[in-house]
Length: 167
Length: 193
Image (cartoon, rainbow over all chains, first blue to last red; front, side, top):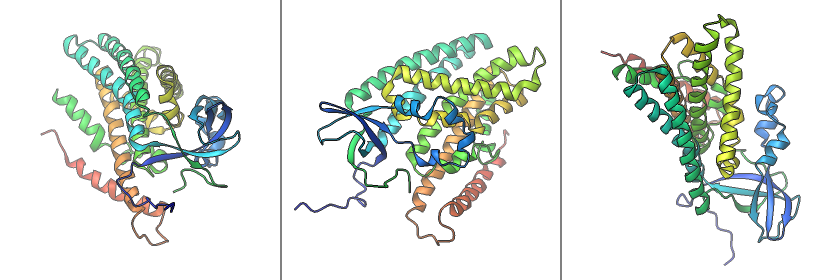
């Protein structure tokens, strides 16, 4: 009883995508976290010329990705924790955000080209399709959120020197 | 209809962006350690390539060609791509903040992906109609995503293999990439007849 179970070879267990986050605020039963900048980005050889750094500051980008966790494990400000989302959640999110708008865009364009055969009409139809697709994506994202698929889960406290994406 | 299908097959498989044109190699080696990240990157890139190529076509047809500003093409296209990436990021953030929190990491990386600029420049070379150029861009990005996912799958399997220390890591990655490129060369025999 109480022994740690090694589930690294349990392929039936849902695979998680892990990341490290910092606790930046604790508000009653809710902890606010900011994802840690990955080393692959920060220490890249092209870091000084990287376009990803030019678009807003790194701090502002990380702040924009701030998220909350239910603090039933007594997290404190400044702690590093490992959080995870299910692998298929990333797939579902990608499909919702990119595939749905792209599918409606192409469908609307194909229909317009087939019926009107004009570039201008096709362009307008594609834009309308994109807007419609984004509206559908919003509904889809709302459903995923309600089911809790988009919420990161607390996995463990990060050990000293623990990094993510080091495989 | 047949010409559109041929165009799509040619762009996705025969002249694959990564394995035949050698574009987007940075993300090909950097974001393929896991299948899920490769899928996320592939979908984001597909969206951005398609949308930015549409915008590039409009800029080329309405501005660069009529005013003979071809020498500004590369700079203009880079600007359009950066704007398309920012637009996509802004829209996703507005439409669904949780989705942005989960997927936002991939978007800025795409700005510096040469495959996006490469496809836009190929469209100009091809002198295609709007719908053809959109389908070409979409198919090219599907080809890009396909190769990313296949390569990520192979690399995931490689982590379970007993590889000699000399070849472990990037060397075996490059060897696998070359074998994948050889396999894709098989598509070059496909013809319309």
